[in-house]
Length: 110
Image 1: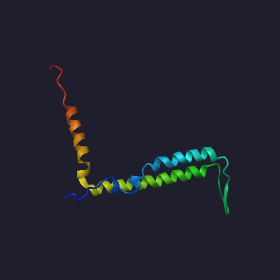
Image 2: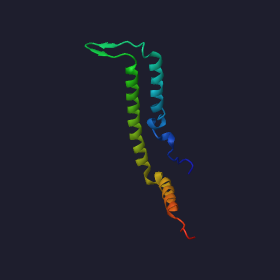
Image 3: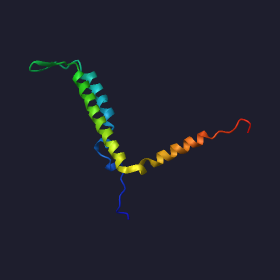
Image 4: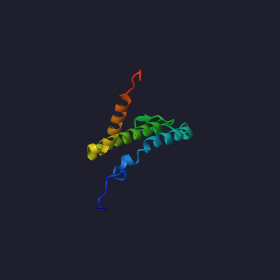
């Protein structure tokens, strides 16, 4: 009886557990660009020259946040699908109850 465990946020997955990184990475990149952006030199990779000035930090942070957001979305959809209709039923019930309660209006003559 007690040995049975219910699913919690602990087994949600890596992306769901670390969703805060989506906001932290660009914030850290902002401060890195502020402090080190002008000091960064252009990077030469053979015939290709990548611009310095901190733009690589900004692009890399946005790319990392995009990858994390995509992983988070996929993991959240799978998490909801794995837990079935019962997982979201309390939310739907309370929203439905709120809508039906708001639609009841008293008549002006009462």
